[in-house]
Structure formats: C-alpha cells, structure tokens
Amino acid sequence: EYVERFKEMTKDISNIHVVGHRPHKEMPVWQKAADVLVLPNTAKDPLSKYDTSPMKLYEYMASKRIIVASNIPSVTEVVDTSSAILVEPDSEESLAEGIKHALELENGGMYTGNAYVKVQEFTWQKRAQRILSFMEKNENR
Image 1 (cartoon, rainbow, N blue to C red):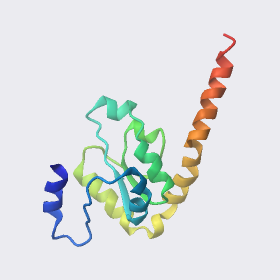
Image 2 (image 1 turned 90 degrees about the vertical axis):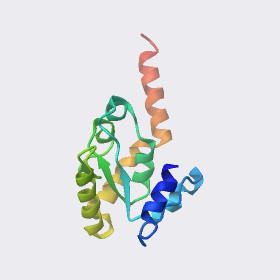
Image 3 (image 1 turned 90 degrees about the horizontal axis):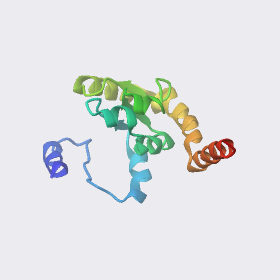
Image 4 (image 1 turned 135 degrees about the horizontal axis):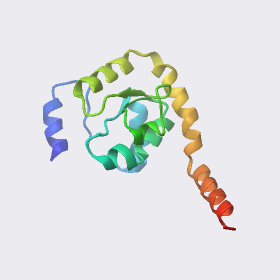
C-alpha cells in the first residue's frame, strides 16, 4: 500500500523510479543503478538506534555507491564520516541536505572507496573467523 501511494506521489518526477519490492538477487543491479543509497533509520526506536545491525548497509558499502545514512550508533559502529554522509536521524531537512551533498560529489568522492575497503572486514568469512577465534579463546575457561 505504501509503495503504491509513493508511486502515485512521484509519477510525474522523471528521475525517480519506484519499482517496489524486488527479489534479493536483483539488489546489486538496482544499487549500481542508483546515484545515492539512503539508509534513513530512526533514532526514536531504541532497537533501531542501538541494536539493529542494518544488513542493507553492508550491501550498500559493497556496491561502491555513495551512502547517506542516519547518524545513530547502530550505523556508526560500521561507517563513519569518511565512508558515508551521516545525517541527523528523523530529520527530513538533514536527509535532503545529505542527499543534495551526495549528488554534488563526483563519483561519490572519498566515501565510496573508503566504504568498500571497510566492508571487507565484515564479510561472512571474516565474521565466522572472529566467532571461531572467540570460541577458541573461551574454550578453556
């Protein structure tokens, strides 16, 4: 319902394409087609603010596209101001300014490269290695 409403609201804007939900396997193609990837998480919900690890963020970082994201702890434990444009959470004005800034940068500036390098530390293989290492250290306790 929300997607259909948004499609209707943006139908006359030529540079906005609302495609709705797509299969996960298509996401890399859609992300590469985007000029800016936006992650407007809320700070009003403590789960979102502190505890949610936004899997979408890792995909965004791997896409080599510029990221505009809410400046909340669950996001900033992964990216910082060198790898994403961080904006005030729950602020339409701040989000709009962040997107405008992102669009002004040529090829995403330093952000895209820094995010791509940083995401290499968050692969499933690296995560599994950290878990196994933790388990080995605690095995003899």
